[in-house]
Length: 268
Length: 268
Image 1 (cartoon, rainbow over the protein chains, first blue to last red):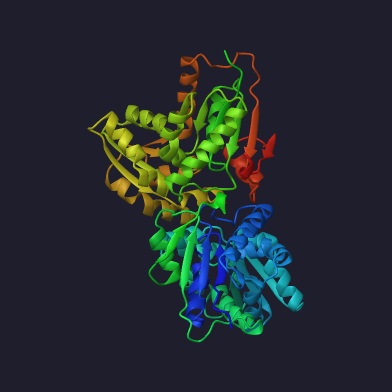
Image 2 (image 1 turned 90 degrees about the vertical axis):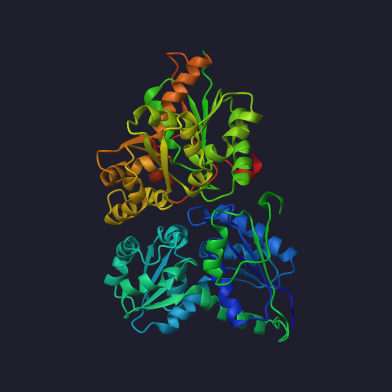
């Protein structure tokens, strides 16, 4: 038993969808979240830079007694998870593997689609993990750079969003994928339009929910779960208060924002 | 006469539209450009943070013997120009004033529109400058957060871009503006669609071009122009090589990218 917090970080606020999923599944776990809002987005930056940011933030979370580290950012998982696992002595998990495992369980025709940021898709991390697990699987990937700003704009059911989704998802439909991994923590907000474009023939895999299930297994396995009577506490750190912080954060977290603190990134 | 370079910076690559305009107008001027690609975009960050970034980059450009500093980023101009002008001893100019002056010369009905990022529009910098110069002017402003990712995607004449432009520009059309300031260095790439939506009744003001004209005047005024036979040299610094760097940079600069160097931002 261990009542220390789970440490979670993301490039910005999108990782709050993972926090939401964990709080729903394990309300007794405390969470310390770091959103790197001063340097968001990671999706269009180099792997070298993302690795250095990730190590810096992991150190910060460890100083706050995190018992495990969750990389709640697909880009950082794609580009920096291995480096973190090599350098840190505690369990470190990322959002890719749980999404991959969930997709492999769901698919019937072995045709799996993946959508994400430019960096995530360019890294081929999902494709490689899927094909490594099952070489009969055929993966079709597509970067969708406009989905993040659309989700942040809150243009959930706008006709333009529908047109953009149709353009981005065209090849995935042609490839007849029966399972589509939402490889970016922002994308669950666009579930309705993505589902509508893909039709009911395709099951969507929300990597935030898959991550929460995986984290629960990991805590049990390492005997690190919080006590049943522990009152799960949520502490948020951000490296900047961006425009519309409250609105956007609440949209992802699904509850009111409290207990948030700004940290100057150069000094951590 | 002074053959030292003009120092120019932007949050990313959008400011290369200003470099392009200056090189066209003053081919004998050397330019040192800093694109803060590791921390782009500035448009959704706080003013405190933008001020600290801007001071850091201005110091860097001064170390490279810049004779004047041009803030080629509307957000940084809106939020940090005054701080830079207070702290530095050399001429520092931003993209806002030239755009404002050009718009005031063009308008006939005194109804001027401004579009830009969330931070630029939220700061009211264009509105305040326009109304200060002429209190008969009526300003209508609108933040267009999706225009930057659309420009970077290169979705210049996509039907979705048209729909998004129609949504963003609705109030500006209703307000009957005869002049529209493109208050973001990315927006000139979307000139065609913006012009089509606004119709020929509205003149667009490209702040990059206005900035180049203003810089030329400033150099003459301070006796800082380069010699007529000086071969204008362009040196680019970036804080990261993002995905699609060459393609996007070339799109903004209008010429092949050469002589570019990556600088680690923590160490400058």
